[in-house]
Length: 102
Image (cartoon, rainbow, N blue to C red; front, side):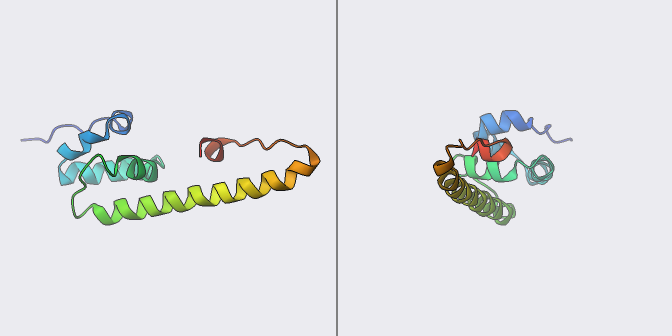
């Protein structure tokens, strides 16, 4: 008997409660896909309170959360200091890509 197919990443990101139904094999595949798409940290931060994470997955989940939160904190620190440095010059701070979303 085959396992049910893993839901799409966008579907899981929109509805992380679907994580609760995943088998360990599906979790392994999901972690690989999330890492490959650089979404593991986002998913771990967003879905932590909404889905129970199996014990073997928990260390990966916590590490991704910590890294994502550290990166967000570093971006905010840098943006604050850049904005302060540019303010006297009247130059607006424009953020692109990841910093723009943070």
